[in-house]
Image (cartoon, rainbow, N blue to C red; front, side, top):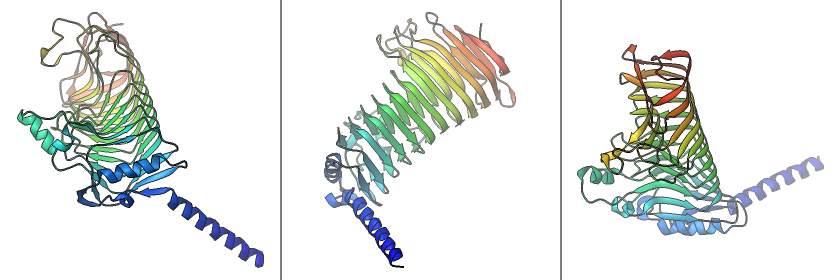
Length: 392
């Protein structure tokens, strides 16, 4: 009996010690003056909390409790000494006046950090005023992305909700080994340039189990993106999952090893899109796989556009130098909102090669859809609806 009592004493002592240790390793932003009232500017409190967690020699949590915390543009800079969790139970809110963020480019910026995990919570950038300014044609500030990771490694973003971003919700730039899972990104379908996730110059990014309703691309994939894995994505409204636009610059890093599987598009302007500027460049796209994709009333389910030239500025009478090769569409099914469900408009100077269509079944208003091909070659196997126009 004595041994049993001693065992229980040791057990509860360990629990108490563990609880004390956890409390010591959690830094609440309210300790530094943050107010959850939706009115008080808590920017400096968040900065001070970050300084504390970044300088900790042990793994530590920066905690944002329930409530609405107003912060202006903020930079969380590294490198830091140890692993950091940012646990958000409440909502982080931008100032009511969009101009408070409009000239910053980024609202919440993590820069040169490693081993950072952001869990849960909501970001509300209150973008409506900025969108209205853009639509009115007034002299507007350039706008801000909601949350950005620049030159960061071993990052995880899980369970985050972002609403009403001025520009892109989440930007991953110059990063390695990033996991994005179960995020919800939401802005009205007419909000300009509100991309869901933008990835560029990054390697080893994984995006899973996420829902994106945006006014621009659900996922946009920029130059220098390699080894990007996406699965269980729900997109729509929005402009689809887009590689590009690429080739704006003559010397530009290419895109390769891109995978999107087990995903659905509903009411989006595009589904699977690759687009490039009609300009000379050494950029490229290669080794892309789209598999098990469901389309529901999507305007352009499958599209390659190598004649991107907005407002006919800087590219008329030129052709794209982006070399597109090795793109596979496997088990893509559903409905198109336009008669042309598959459109490959490739460069006459750099034709698309190695395109593979396997078991593609897309219809238009319960009738046969069409496909169009320019300067594009590849193979077709299995179901082919609409009839393939690829040349071997």
